[in-house]
Each structure stands twice: as C-alpha cells, then as structure tokens.
Image 1 (cartoon, rainbow, N blue to C red):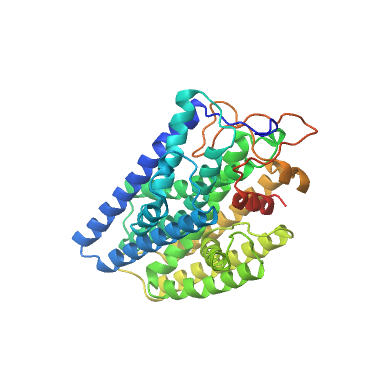
Image 2: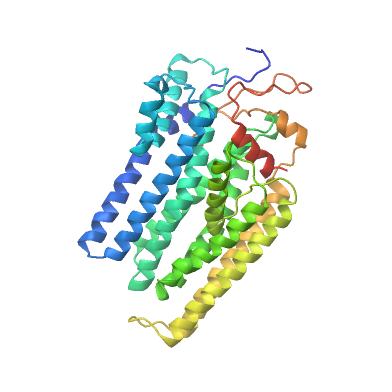
Length: 407
C-alpha cells in the first residue's frame, strides 16, 4: 500500500462510544416494544397501528439500503465478522431485518481489534463502515424517530396533560435526532483535510440549530395532527410528492443503480419533510433558502389551522384563545431563531474548502478524547503540498455527499 495513504487509529473515547453503539441500538428496540405494549394495554389501537407501520417501514427501508450497498461492493467482506458464509446468509440476515446489526457488529469488531492491538488501520476499513452506518442512522432517524416523536407529541396535546417527565422524554428524543444529524455531519467532515479539522464549538452550534429547527417543525406537525389527525397523512403525502419532485429535479447521483437512485430520491423527500439535507452540487444556498421558505410557510399554515380549530372546536380541556395564539407564535419564532443560528454557523463556523481540496482529502484527524458516535481518528496528512491518495476503502457514497455539502 502506498505510503501516502492515511492510517487510522482509535482513541479511548472512540472505542467506548463504538462499544456502546450497538447496545444502545438494542435498547431503542426494547423501548419501541415497550411503547407498543403500552398502547395495546391502553387500547390505543390507532396509535399502535401507526407505531407498527413506522417501525416496520423504517426497518425495511434501512435494510434495503444496507443490502444495496453490499451488492454495490459485490459482497466483498471487510472484517472477520463479515467473513461468515457469503451472500446467502447475508440475504437471510436482511430478510429477517438483521442486516443493520451485522453492520454494527462489523464496526464493533474492527474497533475492538484496533484498540486491543494498538495498530493503525491503513486501509480505513473502520471509517468506511462507520460512514455507511452514519447514513443508515439518518435514514432510520427520519423514517422512525422523527415521526414517532411527532406521534408522542400529538398524544400529549390531545390529552392536554403535561408533566416534567413527559417534557424530558420529548426533549431527549428531539436531542437524539439532532445528535444523529450532527454525527452525520462530522462524518462528512472526515473528508476535509486535517487543517480544516472541526472544533467542538462548531459541532455544538450545528447541534443547537438543528435541534431548534427540528423541534419547531415536529411541534407544528403535532399541533396540526392533534386537531386533524386524519389530515396529517394527507398533508404528508402532498408535501412528500412536492419534495420528491424537487429531489428528482436535483438530479441526484448517490446510488450505483437506477432503482436505488429512485429509492434515494424518495427517501430525500421523506427527510426533507422534517429537515434540510444537501443532495446536489451547486446553488445550494438558493435551494436551502427556497426549502426553508417553503417549510416556514407550511409551519405558519399548520399553526394557523390549529389556532382556528382551538377557537371553533376546542378540546375537552380548556385553553384560552390568546394562549393558543402565543403558542403558535412561539413555534414560528423558534423556527426563525433556528434559521438565524444556522446563518451564524455558515458565516462563522462552516469551512469552505476548494473543490479540488475536498476531493483530494480522504480523512481528517480528530483530537484525542473528542466525543463522537461512530467517528474514528485519522492521522494527519503526510505533506501539505501532496494530498494523500484516497483510501483503498474510501466511501465514495459519503464523499459525494461531502462534496455536495461543501460545494
């Protein structure tokens, strides 16, 4: 292997957070099962049906991506764990919705191997695997976690009962969604040269404005769904069709097959329903402005409809019309605040590397001890005037997304 290729080594923090990643994923499934059982005991069958559709749909979607990416790599396994009997077993794992755990196990195995042997990973296998996982987590977050949080907020609004524990659960769920987006962003940052290393302050600002924007969007959807629960599905379908059209017009080039690309564009439409996601090069600023203008208008309409229903057909619990107006205004104001924070981030913290500089970069080195889920340390570039060659296992899918994000 060329001496100019980057070498990779895990820090203690990398090893810790990689080891807890898979157990936390299993805990999430346990909590989903517990929620489903609770709905069943409470005879909330509609909520139970919606939850099961979200869980099954999200699982099928993530497994489909996992399988397609394995097929694009011609089922070349990159770890000892992935050396198990071949394509047939891998297909069975995905059919039984276990492919994502297989990927988690592969990253965990590589982390344990690197941390135990203290050897660097010259081919960047762990980084390759972690990049795919970060994208799969984004898909899972906006196909399950975000809709599930919207469902939870809708139930809270319909019941009209708010307690500290419920508030903490909602804030924790929204924070987890924003944290997933932030770790995905850090994964994109790994394609920048070492000199563009991301500071922790940049990640904090990125986390905050995503949390603010996502919280406002989900709250607006929950307000609308609490008074017109059947129409929220109509709203989603109509909005998704518009967003899917723009995803198609963006001429995305992420997957290696035409069917996979159409699936990706449909997924982008789903993600855009909740949050912005860069998918194409060039004029990103104008696309982003158009998107946020559309979403802000949609939030205003959703909040206006909720205020109208609260005044004409109020629920069993009493709420003053003025309080409804204040609530709606706060939701809109929070989204505007998120936009302001986003502008500040792009003006102050967002790196703007040259196009060639970005393409030539393979990985960055993260500071020792810096916390990041599924992110792994990389050694510094060998020479400032001679960018390193891409790793043998460079994740070209995530590199495309990085080029789109930093174009």
